[in-house]
Length: 288
Image (cartoon, rainbow, N blue to C red; front, side, top):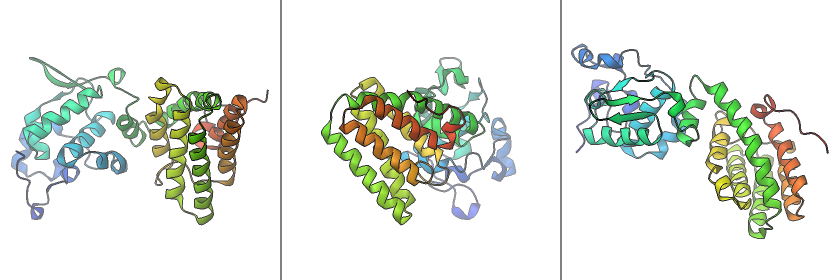
């Protein structure tokens, strides 16, 4: 059973408000028990909380979010011990919440738990860097530039290949849905509806990878989805849609319908170059 949260008038966290309980706000008598958290930034990753926090449920999801951001930001460095009792006091949650949250972080490669050693933060080399949550935490943390560059480079590898493979599979049902997404993006662009356009764009890229018919490639679709999520800043999805990007999407659909693998691949490369994050790290596609 979860421990009772402090009342709202105390200025500390109430139910569902873990990220508002900063070390600096703790009463002086409690700070001695929480020294291992000294220096934690209460505003850490505030922008990045939009996405992952909503994916979790209640205190468990929020604690995963908070600890994950602190680890990825470097606020909790490699080999840092994580004492469940201190975490429970720091965030005013039960042992069950702490235990389950640490298990999630362990599955992501962020921490390790060993008998007689306890739970410790693992080095970056052990992290599952393809995990959508870690991608988001890095993208809104101190490594934001590196993360966005790396995502762009990875998309440059994954999506043109997916477009080429999709052209050879002739999935008419998916091709129809891809066309529908382009139509929706066009209407959204005309109406200035960034959110609807971004959602249709994300669905387009997900469908394209699905159409490739490669299950291992499809397993990487979460990377593309995460890249679209973090590349646009305040808006969900890609950068604000343009006539140029819409035209490239339409060319991909046309190439798929005609079974033109090279054309589909080339159109995807041209689309990716439209995005600033990609344009900085890859050359424009060569004409063959």
